[in-house]
Every structure is written in structure tokens, then in C-alpha cells.
Image (cartoon, rainbow, N blue to C red):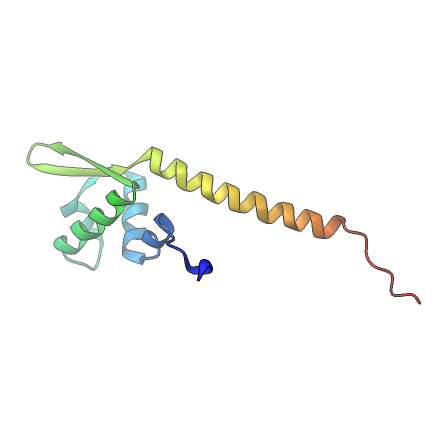
Length: 108
């Protein structure tokens, strides 16, 4: 069914642990151990969530000594914002059209 096409990054953000990771990374770049300390899941689980976020283009990583530091990917977030802006613009355009249509007369 066309209504249930792959939601891509939106599906990725459907998981509340991944949303919590994104919100945490919005504050500052962090290592897995730091993220896991804030969440009710194990370090391996956080690593799996970060892998999904990275595949979706929302997170990047870089080495810092023997640790991997994760941060939000500005390009991925900009693409997400563009999608949201497009959705919002279409919704508001439809709303404007409904408001501007003349009401049909019920007089006979």
C-alpha cells in the first residue's frame, strides 16, 4: 500500500531511545559510555541505536583516542528539516485554499 512506504529517517526516529540519543547529542557530542549512562539501556544497545542513526545520516562519528565520539550530522538534520518544511508548507497551502473558498449558498 502506497500509504505505508518506507519512512526512512522518520521511521528511525520512531524509536524513543533513538530520539533520546538525538536529543542528548543535540546538547554535545558524546561517547557511547556517556550516552548509556543517561539511558535505561546497555552500552551494546546504545551502539546498535547509534548504528541505525548513522545509517540514516543523522549521526557521524570520529575517533578521539580509543573512544568513538558521536555527534549530530548537520547535513542529515538539514535534509530532515527540509522534508518537514515541505510537509508544513503543503499543509498550510491546503488550509489557505479551504479558507479562501467561497462558502456555497444553502439558499434555494
